[in-house]
View 1 (spheres, rainbow, N blue to C red):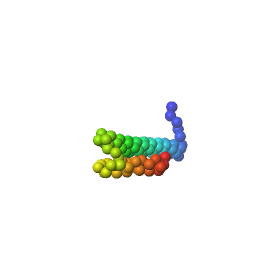
View 2 (view 1 turned 90 degrees about the horizontal axis):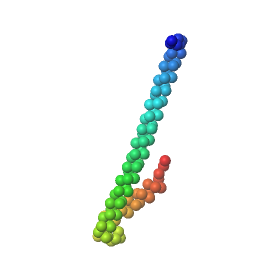
View 3 (view 1 turned 120 degrees about the vertical axis):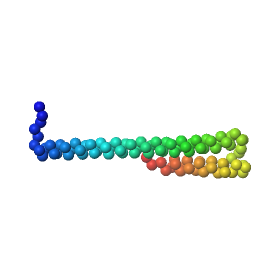
View 4 (view 1 turned 120 degrees about the horizontal axis):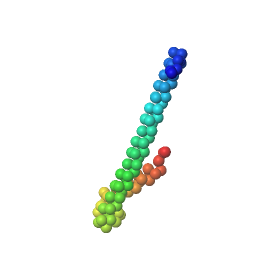
Length: 94
């Protein structure tokens, strides 16, 4: 047994169903964007950590003191990564 709504009520119901569908779509889009941002932030942090570990490994492998000038580019990059890590920790806005 179907409902016999007034034509205006049917139009209003259709409108509210459409609005609800649009709100659900926006909610899903926002959630997807937040998940993507979180994934990119984790990926960026992991890339930073892995590069720093790799450079530390190079220093350890060759028994090089970071203050020696023989491997200045590596030492400079390690110091740069440490500075970037400090900035990242200080500027997290979540």
